[in-house]
Length: 255
Ligand SMILES: C[S@@+](CC[C@H](N)C(=O)[O-])C[C@H]1O[C@@H](n2cnc3c(N)ncnc32)[C@H](O)[C@@H]1O
Image (cartoon, rainbow, N blue to C red; front, side, top):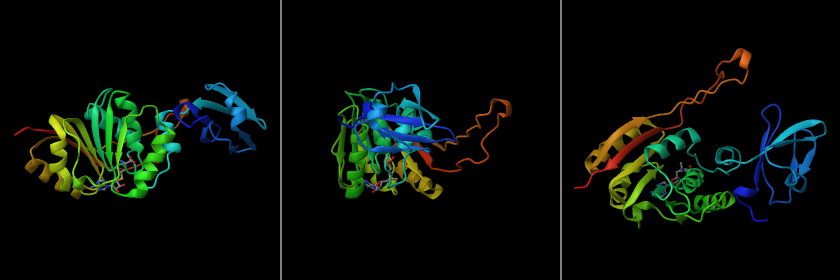
């Protein structure tokens, strides 16, 4: 059995226990009490429950959120689901779209883009560091559904091959250095999204975007407040993630 989306499951237990497992592997799987194995789990229908040593677990098909948050190997900061889903709406990413991306990093957002653009769309992703390029390749291979991602192990400062792209997403430290290149790769009116962690990066990006001939339409950040799952005492979690990044959105204007 080859590892893919179809072979991934998530096991859910009490006290927030969760574990993504791959039925294509033959490994033993440690649980809070005892262990199980993939041969046993392969026989259990996803969406049902099982018991090991008196403890109950649910087994579900692993979705994109589960894979990115609980399984994908990270060696870089990643685009989290709360930003990723908003970015993809703002960039109008739908099946059939041709989208550019830099840097690939751990490939978290690339995995999501690949699923969104579908079998007839394309994702062209650039990563300058070989170790991250290889990591992202592996992460994509683990959760692939479509053969629609073209990966480059190079800096986009050296140029972007593609032309007439529908959208481009930048998650790099100095996006202002590459806006001219990105502009060449986009179609007229094409969407650009940028994620940066600090406000001074936003300022520098805005100044360069204006000079480069983009129409800037938004700077924003996304805060997500989760709730404790107690219907009788429903209230927010005590702690929340205060900051992940700032988002900048623009459209290419033709001269
Ligand atoms: C924060 S990570 C990207 C994480 C990625 N969006 C994800 O969700 O996993 C930033 C990456 O950009 C890469 N990078 C920075 N400048 C670059 C450039 N000019 N061209 C290509 N990659 C670049 C870095 O090596 C790093 O891996």
